[in-house]
Every structure is written in structure tokens, then in C-alpha cells.
Length: 338
Ligand code: TYM
Image (cartoon, rainbow, N blue to C red):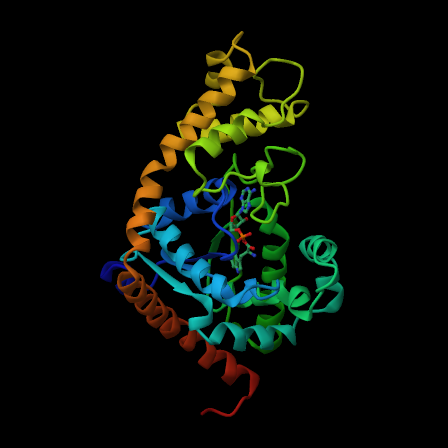
């Protein structure tokens, strides 16, 4: 955060995060991170690697530690400037878990039962439907409310969790007196939901069993081109942006977000050319687009000391803000001061 931003206490606050599971996908990048970068000059921004959220799924601790550091390197390689943004691990700020518990006592079972992500995850992890998976959206609300966040840039899949965070903030403020800002969701008009390349009715996901459906930013160039070649399309053989052609619509969205071209320009560019050239061009475009990301990522990964300096500094700044909020929360609740 620049000094200017800190001095200006009217500066609005942004919080967002990503789970350090697997590696970042093109969906994460287009749906969220591309926006984070765009907002860093106008807001006081907190971007967290939400490691506690990832504990809802069974994991190998050794691999998890690596994946956490890799995510930090991926955040930085995406261009997030640690001088302008507070970048930190969620677990380094214990106030997240503290507020999470408090908000659990202000969230209703009925609300949590309606969460579609819980229903989906319970389906895919039938042998481990743990309580954390169920209360996950409450911890997410704590992440957001802890920083008195005004704006949360996320993809479309997080909309329901954001609505719950708003409801909890309003309920808490009405019950105990105003503490929290009621956060607004920030989503791109195009690209809020990048779909799987193998099933364009499903969102592109880190945890998709079919890796061909997902582009990972750390995929090999050849793998990316191959995944694009195999992307599911249709038999219309026309590059048109319409709901009846969900595969093409998704590919056009990716093209547009990376090239900056409008859908109309893309339609004109590929008129009469067929899908082969279209898919190949997008593959090459992705490879070229993420080349600098990969180079920076490799540099950061060879410098663990630098990564440590960044996450320690980030946690310190985040704790300062989080503790200021928690002091008020504890007082409002009638907890005895320590
Ligand atoms: P996660 O880690 O699944 O995803 C990180 C961000 O990427 C967006 N995203 C997508 N956007 C477009 N198309 C897709 N296919 C796609 N897949 C993912 C997500 O919407 C998200 O913005 N619960 C969150 C992490 C979280 C969080 C928070 C986010 C925890 N606490 C507080 C915001 C605020 C999650 O699992 O994101």
C-alpha cells in the first residue's frame, strides 16, 4: 500500500482471495486476478491466499506447503504489486478464524443449507463432508468483513457467498451496532464465468477430474495448444457469440479478454475460416499472453527469501487492520478486554 493510500482514510477497501489448491487457472485469471490488478491504484487492496479454506479438502501437508508458496509466486507473477497491495496468507492473521467463529454464531443453518457450492462439493467429496465445508462461506464472510471491505472482485461462482456475507454484515450491525461495511460484489461484464473446454455448461475449475477442460497458467505451451485443439465446439462451423453455441461463446470470451477485441470484431475476423484456425489462434494467444507470467513465476520460485519477506510484511499490515476491527467487534459483543 502506498503512503498516500494509507493517509487517505476515505480510501475504499477491497478484499479478495484464492484457494491455494492445484495452480491458478485461466478462469481464475480472467474472472478475478485480471480485475484485482486493474483496481490496485484506486483502492486499499487486500489479496489473500486463503489457506485455511483449503483445509476443507484432504491434502498432503508437504505438497500443500509447496503449493502455498507457489500461489504466492503466482500472485506476484500475475503482476500484483506488493507495494500497492497487501498480499498475505490467511492463516497468518488469526483474526480470520476468530471472526469466523463469531459469525458462525450469527449465521443460520437454513442459509448455509442453500449454498450450491456446499452441495456440489459434498457430491464430489462424499467421504469427507466435514463441518468446515459446511461453514466455509462464514469464514469467507469473516475474510471480507474483517477489513471493512467495500468491494469484492470475484468470478460469478462466488455471488451466492457474497450475498450471504452481506446478509451476515447487516444482521450483525443491526444486532450489535454498526461495525461492518456491507460489501458490494465486483464482477466483469464478460468473463465472470469461464467454462470448461470439455463441457461448456460447467465452469472451468482447478479441481476438474478432466484436466483437458482446464487451462492452468503453468501448463506447458504444447499442452495448452493441445487442450485448445480438443476444445468442444459444435457443428455450426461459424464463430458467433450466441447461447446456442456455448463452446464457441466461451472461446470467444477468452479471445476477447486476452486480445481486447469486441465480439463483433472476432466474428468478422473468423468469418468463413472455420474452427481449426480459431482454436489454434486462441491457443497461441494464451501461450504468448502467459509467457511473461511463467518467466516471472520461475524467478520468484527460486527466491524463497523474497517470498518470505513479502508474506511477512503482508501479514503484518493485514493483522494491524484486522485487529482494529476485532477490538470493536469484541467490545460490541461484551467480551472482556485483554
Ligand atoms: P477460488 O480459489 O475457487 O477462485 C479464485 C477466484 O477465481 C474466480 N474463478 C473464476 N472466474 C471465472 N471463471 C471461472 N471458471 C472461475 N473459477 C474461479 C473465483 O470466482 C474467485 O474470485 N471461496 C473463494 C476464495 C475466497 C474468497 C474469500 C474470495 C475465500 N474467501 C473472500 C473472495 C473473498 C474460492 O474458492 O475462490
